[in-house]
Amino acid sequence: MLLIEDDDCSAEVMLYILRDRGYEVEAVGDGERALDVARRFRPHLILSDIDLPRRNGFELAAEIQRDPALSQTRLVAITGLPVTDCLDRAFRAGFERLLAKPLAPELLLRVIEELTGFPGRAG
Image (cartoon, rainbow, N blue to C red):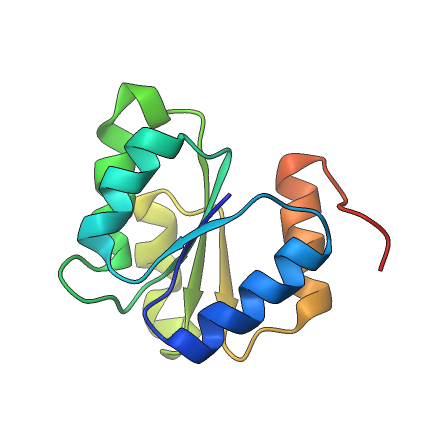
């Protein structure tokens, strides 16, 4: 799994939750580096903030959708922006889910399990 989050505190919390549940996660803080890491790491799932430096989540999702090597990668958008402002654009960009910050850990884990089929380790 690849986590793309430019807020260090949010990234650390999500990494802790995900790794504690047994998920293998790499994290990057900007959309430009994220694309390089995604191409190298080829994650099954990408959790991406929308409001990123250098390349926003919408642009990043579009690039991922165009890359044949990443065509099977599932995309989940995360945003601190009003969800109603992002929802349609997120789905058009290729995101399957849009989650609002602050994230409830239970919701994050449930969405990951739904999309990957892997529930992680029990609590």
